[in-house]
Image 1 (spheres, rainbow, N blue to C red):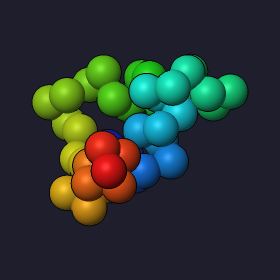
Image 2: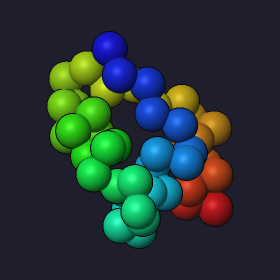
Image 3: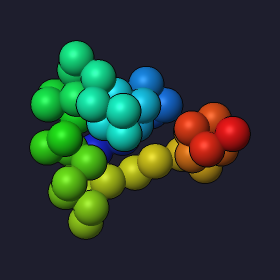
Image 4: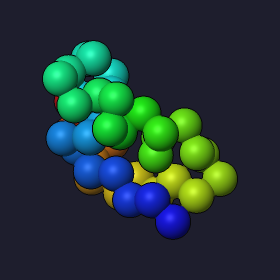
Length: 44
């Protein structure tokens, strides 16, 4: 399982300097876990 936090989501969504590192984990949706609080922080 892959757990991605707020910083990883922000890097991925906004093409930050470390986005390539998080892309692999985020694209594997069958093993991806994102805490609800992280989603709230990103979309807030």
